Image (cartoon, rainbow, N blue to C red; front, side):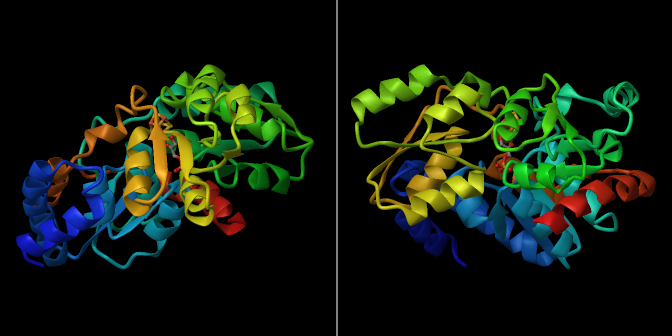
Amino acid sequence: MSVKKIYEEMKTKLGNVVPDLELKYKAELVAKINQLKKEKNAVILGHNYMAPEIYHFVADLGGDSLELARKAAETDKDIILFCGVKFMAETAKILSPDKKVLIPSLEAGCSLAESITGEDIRKLKKQYPGVPVVTYVNTYADAKVETDICCTSSNAVKVVNSLDADTVIFLPDEYLAGNVARETNKKIISWTGRCEVHEKYSVQDIDDIRRQFPDVVVLAHPECRSDVVKAADFAGSTAAMIKYVEKHDAPCYLILTECMMGDNIAAANPQKNILRLCSVRCPHMNKITLENTLEALQKEQYEVNLSKEICEKAAQAVKKMIEIG
Ligand code: 13P
Ligand code: SF4
């Protein structure tokens, strides 16, 4: 597609969230990326937090962690370019060990993934022998290797309830563990990991917005503190929040998650008022840009390298989760 045509489409779709001057420059990058993607037989997976120009114009497949893990396992392309953070690209590699998996920035980490190691989990298993370990997909491969089954925010309760045990070790997100504990009869042993973005939202934020916008519907990610989730009208994964806005008629929503997702929802629902608190940002997701996505394809960087042995061991826990859905 010509740069002019891409620019026109971007203007129609993103005109309400991206300034026109930026769109002209971005359209040229989008054209280059999409051309190179074809030449290299690559697929681009884009997390829901990606900037609108990436999410709507270069990602072939978008979604939350669970949807992207499934899509990564199914692709027949030679290269998977992951526009998201490192643990997500690693999960793609674990599920497709023979493919070249790339991530545009090595700085795209995650405070949850960094909060726990495989060694930490080995110690917990010694402390609680026989207790099954559920690990959030927001972890690195060395932690997944020590795990019985992974989960994402969209299936955490289902995964915990699927286990034939009264007590479950649930790692590493302290707040997600607390939110899951309220929805299950099982005893949950948790860790002290936190998402540096979602931990910042407070009930005060919700009260302030409700005062200014009395008809607002508040959506919170389950990585938020329990009191925030309780004060919200709905809690769910990033994909569940997107679907919620699509399916409901309310005119105004507050999205308590990475602000960029609010831009993506606003672009797709121009008739609705999408409120977001942009003083709270994910510094990791924001490392991914059109510029470094293009560079990643040109130079085939940065490749995710995991040994076959690690991939095999970690895949068991990820595949069990995918089977549960
Ligand atoms: P989702 O699985 O809901 O997309 O969450 C991923 C994440 O990193 C949230 O901060
Ligand atoms: Fe990790 Fe939080 Fe960023 Fe998601 S928003 S990638 S959980 S730091």
